[in-house]
Image (cartoon, rainbow, N blue to C red; front, side, top):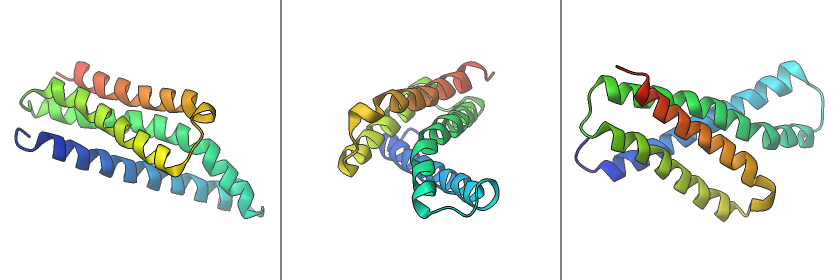
Length: 131
């Protein structure tokens, strides 16, 4: 992963975002069909808005952990730099997307910080706990 590191990490961050969005859609589908069926669409939209950051934090932790673990096992060149840059690039993309979407930061900053801290923690622990 020596060549084009930034572009590869950006692509991986986008792929990770897409994966987390798919997981979030699946969670809302399970919620709407099996857990709490028969309500207006607005109920499920509200649920999606409230659950998405938690889905992002929990599953983001897992994904970042597994990727960092894979890099460490494969003994990639300068793996610690990858482990730090990957969540940084992800967070920068996330900030751009959220800002363009017009989300009010005051309502969102705490859960945003926690969800992305989970990604940094997952990446770091994936690196540290792998031999």
